[in-house]
Length: 276
Image (cartoon, rainbow, N blue to C red):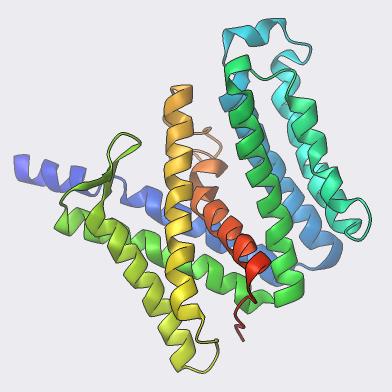
């Protein structure tokens, strides 16, 4: 009985990993079948939900919130503003697009708990940029590029999970993410390299994918750790309960956030690789 219980406990969070992959695949499906206004509206809804969770984590549960103008409605108000700003920014890209992303940030600052304002700004900006960036990747670089990006995140996460459970060893960053090990972290990088190498050998990707893929995987791991830190700061296990038994959108969206931001940063200093 003890051995069975230990085995079950060892793999108890496997379902969460599978849920993360399912959410990413669902987003990939949306990006695959949607285009134009529907693609931008879909991403606006996803970003709005994620921003709602961030608003709750950075102030809504805090005692100071009782005296703020928005009160308990503030997270919903900010969610609508965030989703709308992403949608609007994508439709006015050549004019005021990037500036529109500032609206939910500026609107949320007054009501956010004082000690969490810089956290709200940092995570809020990341969420909004990711929504903007993913649609940009889809429309400019094509669906295969987006699928590569999500494939890196999923492969890194699964490889890291199984390596960490089976090999174990020293923790990567025990204070922020006590379950992550160095073995799992490195396995995630190796899995990403393999994905890049397979695409290159199949003739459907540039050689740069081999070195960019592990960097993107590492950024995804950092996104996961950053969200773990945010939840510890807020004193909660999950960002919300929107996905029954599996937490919220931020819990499933954290790694793709870090990975997308990394690709956007790489694109500022180098030509992004081609994926057919």
